[in-house]
Image (cartoon, rainbow, N blue to C red):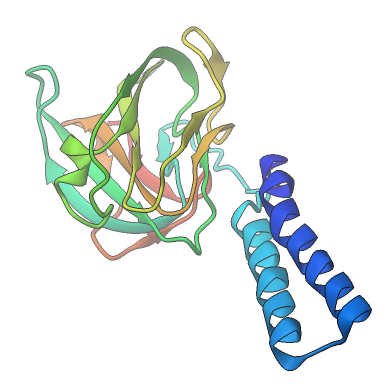
Length: 211
């Protein structure tokens, strides 16, 4: 569980308790019971959203793992700074784990926060136009870039590392609240191991292998 989840769940739980106390003091009614139940369910969903399960990280040194849970939406050639490469885009629904993990072992070379729009994360334009963190990583096998992209509902991107930090493949590095998108850019020589429609798990599913 991400510690922040308890803070967000506290409000609905307190509201449910307040409604229950009101009903006990002034008399119960079906609509008060229903309202209290809604707040309890909301609090339970918030705790579910902020879950942070352990993952078995692959031992393959050539692997690039998914930085997020979700569904692969796009696998496409894409240049970066004039260099040929490939982009894999992953959509996270509100039911997916939203903790992000390092796709490779290496050093955080740069973190670039960019303001932007809040288009639905399912739409391709979100990759270029939405608010996002662009994280560049230097690994022994080459450079990799991944983006934490806000969606229509997601309004808060968290990144828990800083430039110069050394991370291991699968380490927790941040999260995006309530629905989002994560893009991964790899050099053209990398061998992509997924295709659109595949479901991936952060830190566990192999997206690609260095060649």
